[in-house]
Image 1 (cartoon, rainbow, N blue to C red):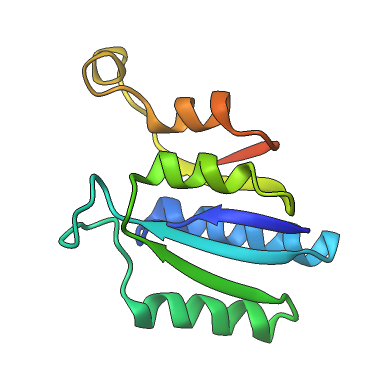
Image 2 (cartoon, rainbow, N blue to C red; image 1 turned 30 degrees about the vertical axis):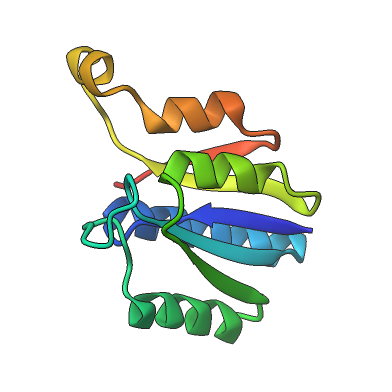
Length: 129
């Protein structure tokens, strides 16, 4: 069984990481850190470096949580997370969210809303402070 974290290298990602790590430790679950590119882009501010992912894995392992990281550049972030939520061992999905205006949601859609509605496991949405 595992907790899947949709990680982006910013304050939303760090807030979601902290929550996912806490939940994984509390529930005795493996933490799977997923980082994906947007629209098949390898030059993307949401794409974490290998050293960033290695650091996250090291921090979680030091806290006693079995952890692995996955880069997925074959599909969009929401698609990859929704597909991962369908895996047999996915107990929970943790994502970071940000506030958007109504117009922003209308024009750009909401990846978080799509994940919340389409994931097959419970989703925890975390706001950065």
